Each structure stands twice: as structure tokens, then as C-alpha cells.
Length: 249
Image (cartoon, rainbow, N blue to C red; front, side, top):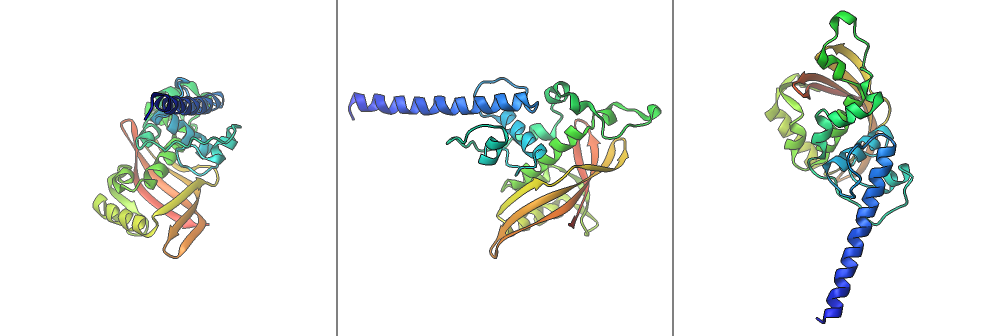
């Protein structure tokens, strides 16, 4: 292989990388302008950028993927790009935990889910906001797309009120998630409406939301909408699921 050919390959690789970085930088800028990203505009595809993409997708009613899709680029007002970044596996962790930078910078994130009585105000209750809940739901969906069921299992408490099965263990949930993944190896989800806080007891609350799904089994694709209900408990810096149910809409 002559030196000119090697140099040409190197030049093409460098140009491709530069264009990819420019695409990501444009995405970061668009997300920052809309209040979904507060990191550096560095053109680097990382967990923080993926989390911001997921945050935009769930607020915009798009399919929640954590990666760049044609729908997401159109929603951000950006041209289609050849560069489609995969969602880093750790991006859901940023959404699940309290993203202090996002919560501090986004004014709308400071609105509590329900105005509590003055005498019952607690720090933990003040910090559970609608933005925080949307982040949690996005994280839960992203983790559920991972082929490793332990990613989604991390959201559940040791004992959970699980659909119509009553109080079950994490081991039982793990088995159910494995069966679901085997039956529906390909899945798509998007938020189909607003989150509704149906019960608020300080460190425990219940939130419900319509979730549109498309799942593929051996029989082909199935789609529909369910109203998902999550019973959540505050544990340190995280929300943990202590109950889950759903109804078809």
C-alpha cells in the first residue's frame, strides 16, 4: 500500500470524524437552546448527551431511544445526518438520579408535583418535580429496552406490588422480564400524554401515564396504548418502584 493511499484513507477518516463531531455539536446546541442540555458543546457523544436526547424525546412525544433518530433530528430542526449514535448503556442512570445541573438550570423543573401544605414541606418532597418524574420514566423505558434485564430490575424494590400477582420478589420479576424479552425481542415506546400524580404522600407517590407501545413477536408487530401506574418511594437520591400496574386504553 503506497503512502498516498494511506494518507488519503487517514484524511477521509479524519474528515468523517470531524463531520460526526459537528453533527453532535449541533445537536448539543439545539438541546441547550431548548433547555434540555447544560453540558459543554464539545461534539462528544456521551451519557450526558444521550440523556438530554432522551429528555427531549419524552417531552416531545417521540419514541424514547436515547439515540439520534430522523424523528429527533426533525424535532430539533436539524437536517438528517448520516451519523446515528447508539445510546450509551449508562445514560439512563443520569436520568434516574437527580440531575442537579439540569434541575438547577431549568426554571420549570422547580415546580413541585403538587403544592404541599406549608407545615408539611420537606426537602425530599420539594425536589420531586414533574421534570424529575419525566426523567425517571424516560430512564425506566430506556433500561427496559436493554437486553440485560438487570438494567430494568435495578428500578424495583426488593418486594413489589406487581400487576395482578400481588407482592412479589425481585427474583420473580427477573423471571417475568426475561420471558417478556424473549417473547418481544424488539420494542418501541413513547409517552402518549401527560404524567398524572394520582397520590402524593411526601416520600411516596403514585404517578400514571399513557404509554404507546409497538412490540414484535413471532406473529409480527403489535401496537396499542396502556395507562401505566407506578408507585414510587424516595430512597436517598433515587426513586424506587414499589408497585406497578397497567390498563389498556
